Length: 155
Image 1 (cartoon, rainbow, N blue to C red):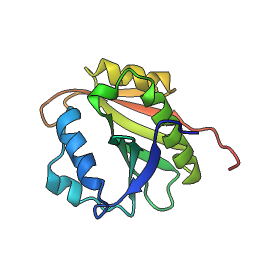
Image 2 (image 1 turned 30 degrees about the vertical axis):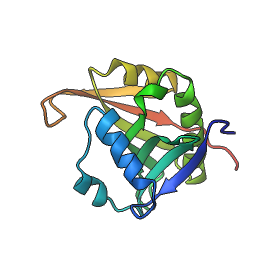
Image 3 (image 1 turned 60 degrees about the vertical axis):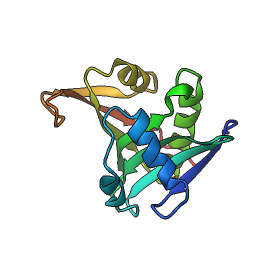
Image 4 (image 1 turned 135 degrees about the vertical axis):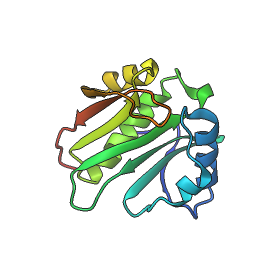
């Protein structure tokens, strides 16, 4: 399905892990520290990266607890220079395929209420707004909680 790159599931020992941390530091509005990244338990945190001709193009991070059919989208990011190219929709299609393989039936997230580009993207891929959370982020900014219910398909 993906014509622009290869989807990888990464662990902290993978050579591309550092590229993901770098993208987070440069291109994500609220980057995590290196120690935050290294503290993830990648047995239930699913770190997916999109590898293209020039290296890692973007990543997403989900938390999927054993026995749960929902996933918490913690981070998703494409390199800034690749935004508005259509790559985000292709990346999202690959992510959905992966989530269905994991038997995930719903995805939820929190997004900065002022991040209109992200909210527009999530709405475009059928996330529904659930609620507004005042002062959610450590800097006092507000968040929206959003939910996507996945279609159950036979794989």
